[in-house]
Length: 62
Image 1 (tube, rainbow, N blue to C red):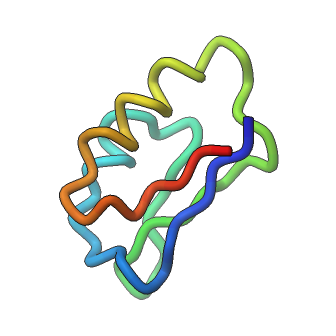
Image 2 (cartoon, rainbow, N blue to C red):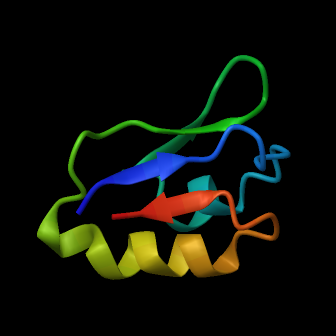
Image 3 (tube, rainbow, N blue to C red):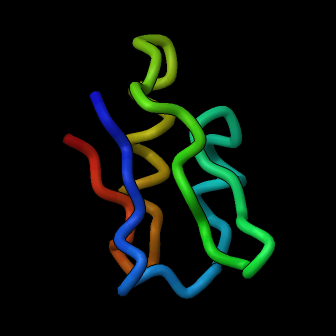
C-alpha cells in the first residue's frame, strides 16, 4: 500500500502524524507528508486510521 498526502487539501492539523508517525511527518512548512514509499504491512491498520481521522480527507491510500 502506498500513502500520499493531497497537498491541496492538507491544512496541517497533524492528526495523521499523531496516529501513525512511522508513515507521516510534518514538513518545515507545517504540512503533512508521507515519509515511506510503501506502508509496511504491520502499519496498514494505523495508516488507514490516520486516513479516516484526517479532517480534510488529505490522506490518500492506494
